[in-house]
Each structure stands twice: as structure tokens, then as C-alpha cells.
Image (cartoon, rainbow, N blue to C red):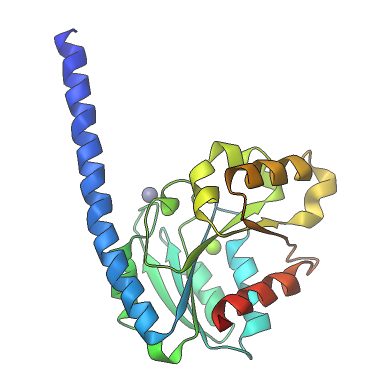
Length: 228
Ligand code: MG
Ligand code: ZN
């Protein structure tokens, strides 16, 4: 083995160890968050998906259907702006904005800090809109009860197999912008098969926020998660 290659291996080892430490520390705070959520009787959904998959619009439509039924608060993760938080605030719910300053995911300490400004006892459902990204948001437990991933039709049907972790970790997938199906080569049957191969018990919804399809089914399911 060359010295250079040996160094490369040691470097890689160090990186793996560092990542383990980071995730370990995160998991400890996530466990505390989970305890706190459970003590306050609040159900927490970690909403993930690519930039442009339609997370915020879906959230607006979801809130419009649920605000009269349950008490909801939202944590908005965004790289730099407060644009999404402003949109959500107009739905009449409490919103806490987290700017990650370029960070590509939310972690448990960020959620812990944000929750200090929320009255968790007064909330039934806390929705966390994660940073738009199909990779590392799935690696960081924030203490949520379940993860949801939004995949828009325009992103392509290959995404479940290309980003398996996020689809394995999520209890539910929303095929969003389903109204655009006729204008793309997205193979819905293939995507469904890939998804259920990865995660046999995953719940799938087909939604369109512009055509208002699938949203009642989705919100009824979500309401059931809170009632449980
Ligand atoms: Mg958004
Ligand atoms: Zn990240």
C-alpha cells in the first residue's frame, strides 16, 4: 500500500468517526425533543423534499383544511430568507423561522431552540418544513414522530431509487403536482413499485395544489395521525 493511499484511508476513517460523533450528539438532543413533544401531547411531522417540490404550497393547502379542526404551529427551515414563513403566517398559525445560513438541513438542536418560543402544550400538531434537499435531512433525527417526503412529478420517477434513504425513512410520500403527469414521462406505476420495494408499508398520496386534488385524503390521514 502506498503512503498516499494509507493517508487517504486514515482521512476517510477520521471523517467517518467525525460524522458518527455529529450524528450521535444530534440523536441525544433528538431524544430529548421527542420526550418533550410526547409530554406536551404534540405530534410532530418532519416535511422534506427537494427545492421546488411544492412543500410550502402543500403546507398552505394543508393548513387551510386543518386550522379550524386542530391547533397547529409550523417551524420553517430556510437557507436564507423568511419568504416561506411569511406565506405560512398568513394562514393564521404560529411560525418560527430557522435560517440555516446556508446549512442544508435542520438538526435536533435547532428544533430544540426554536421550540423554546412555542407553547407546545397549546399545540396538537407541529409541522417542520425542512430545508429543500433529498439527502441529509433524512439523516438527522429532529425528534419528530414521522417524516413525510414530497416528490413532485417534474423531478422524475427515478428519485426513489436514487435517494433511497429519505424514502425508507419517511412514513408517507406525496407525489405532488400530479396534474403535470400528462406533460412528463414520469412513470407513476414504476415509481410506486420502486417506492414500495424500498419501503413496503409506505403510504402514498397523489396531490395537486393547483387542481386541489388528493388534498382531502391527505389531510384526513394527517388528522388521523394527530387523533391517535
Ligand atoms: Mg418551502
Ligand atoms: Zn445537510
